[in-house]
Length: 221
Image (cartoon, rainbow, N blue to C red; front, side):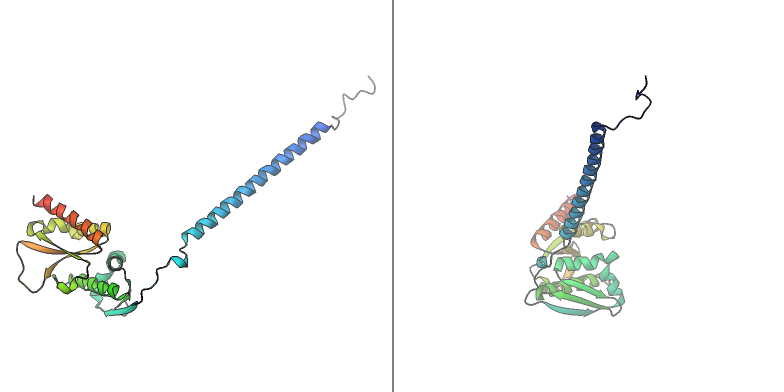
């Protein structure tokens, strides 16, 4: 068997070269698809970041009577207006639609917005501060089309208020309102009822009113 190729290495053939090229092409396609997916994900993240930013064109246009008012307050008032985690200040700003900045070092409350927004914010801030020292006294001048007054039976006042005011705060949060018990005018106080003032837009006041009336009915059927 001279001249036999049994002991020699396998000769190069066309099929092996083709297989190598196919494998290389497969790896190339895989890398190409991977790079394509990576680029797609990158573009998606870029679009997401762009969408999350508020374009300047969406900003509200300032009203023609836009201005700035300031209130000088005490250190105790500052803590009361700020509230836990700044929530009370945010609530006053949200309900009045005014921009509010509290400068704790100078004890100045700065209110920015239209004339009506500033008037409402100042009124709400005064009401919140008044709660610290006693009952809030309000007059007919308090109503800028943003006030609903409810009579709450004396025996239901504690139930409506909730522990540490939690029930009222929950209603305020849900309906974007500001609420506190008050005395109206300079007349004598009614021992059978307490007046509850609800400030906010029409929808918010109605929603809050229904929840309060439901609580009163539960306590005093």
